[in-house]
Length: 456
Image (cartoon, rainbow, N blue to C red; front, side):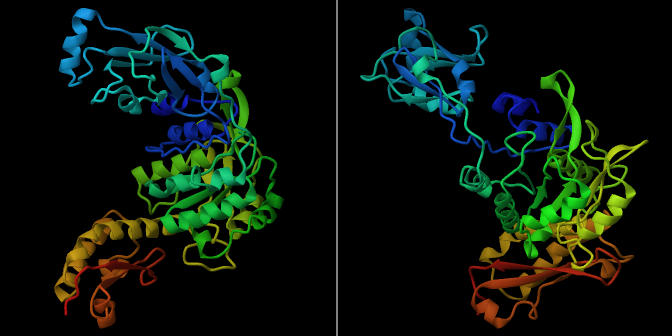
């Protein structure tokens, strides 16, 4: 959380994202990949003695930036220039960057130059969390020493309320295309707001492609009797719903920015933290629910849930958050959006689906070495040995049901899974199954890995 505070500025009353991040780490989260969506905000700019700087990110936070240009003593300038590998004839300067009142700078960059070389200012400031160089002095000259602030003409404003394209574009969900994640949370731009309905379907399909789970948040006024109707309006259907999970209601927690007053927040950040905590202590195959799945930091729920609510919603694939006298607020449900009893899907339960996704991703990554191997029985035997050892280790940890490995899992890679037609196309097919319910009831995963060489 300290790193989030440093990079993004910590909690902000106007955004739901920082509160979700807080709840994630508070409940046991380890690593968060954060994408900031600015919604049309612009960049603050300042002139630092001829060196044109701009804020590293959009928003009015940049209006508080200041820069201080310092010239080294003339007796040391040429020596520093040669020592840094520059050929600028001693034209070096130091740059200090801070926020708010001029006191202690947050960043300090020494021995910079505007001339070509390893210490050129626009190259070095790529490592800054606060500013970037927009334009070097023209003509190239040493920036004038002094302290500079954002003037009225260079001030920025915050963005407007986020719309569906903001979330769906390359600056939103699309920015995660090169990331590595397994849980996706989409907090609203306003802590008490909601996402545009069409965002959820795009996010769910994206998660289905990336072997990740989407945590769907409820609107603030949603009550149990209307939950199924509201969920139906999101048009989430098909196999992709195996990768979605919905929890009701929102959580109530103290807001440090309102002197500890109790506010209502979306539950996805806290639940992602509970899942991460359960993964670390028990494994991805353990349901992130029950009295051990307490929601730390929560003082209650926005709507009290009863046994009757759980009995009614759980068979519909809707998970409840409950409050019990001894346990506090806990996660009390572990079904996917495909978890309605009427669907009878093999991935109705969150731990079963997440275990399958974990295996798919692990096996896909763990078989990259086959790409340039001859596609023959020798390769198939090596694959069975390698993946069998991986599955056996998970069996020992309790990931699968069954008294013996034969009852718990299987790995198949032979002439039946990989035909001559597959060999000619440079493809090896692997089938892995595990028993999530009871022995002999297997969930089967098919992995297809390309090879670059056929065996004849």
